[in-house]
Image (tube, rainbow, N blue to C red; front, side, top):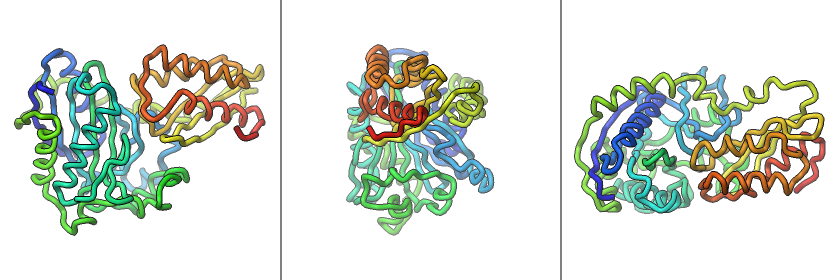
Length: 370
């Protein structure tokens, strides 16, 4: 926590521009090694956008035609969490620091989301803001902020949105495919009952300066550091231009698409799907061949997993597995997580295995309950 901190301020036309900049800042920071400067990035966007978590299935989460019709941009971030609608009423704060700053992702989330972000919202007038778990900050029973996090080489990324202005819920409800289990553990049943904002709670809209200063002061208080004004340096600008076409590409945005992954399959292949929410949602899709073996598998959801490549390795490990060998599926996924030393906050290997098992049963025509 003792490394120097700088404050960057950015306004994007589209949130899709944020991912290449964030990646550029991280890549350059990692190149510079031990003692590299930490960054607090505060930003806003001009155009409406939906942002997918890295591990979400675009076809499960979004009404793509409605997004096109309404001119809502689509982006995908590196890091877990759910799909959120953002617009010019949303504010964002990102911290980039050494991965060793905290012992694990849960402790990092508690410090950043539970103290810095919650403290920021309280400073702006939401005195009842409280930290619900690794993802959310709420005011009463209503969500006001969410978290994305990732470990990328030696850099820990912590990023949060905050509803400063009142969200355009009517647009969000049209472009997001909100699943029934979204509110299963909540005291509300609709999105407009679930989200809130500083403006709605306090009756006033904090200025950009108020927001920025509240974030800075709370980070300094919690992390015990000083944050100075800074600028994006020439090396970071070069890397940003190199990465921009990658993270604004269709290939990246459709990185997880069930329609594309399961759209064309050989004859005799049967498919199944299952959704299961423990503390986070896991969606499993499988294709099973005529010999009763898993031909293809896809795991998706609003969960967090590090390293990011662990999810692809888990999917690959299922290829060729006996589809109806429930213990074998659990063992394969458990071994993969252990081998990769993966962190899956709030989820266990069983939370991934159970929806796979049920998806297999659907594919095989055996829909008995677990």
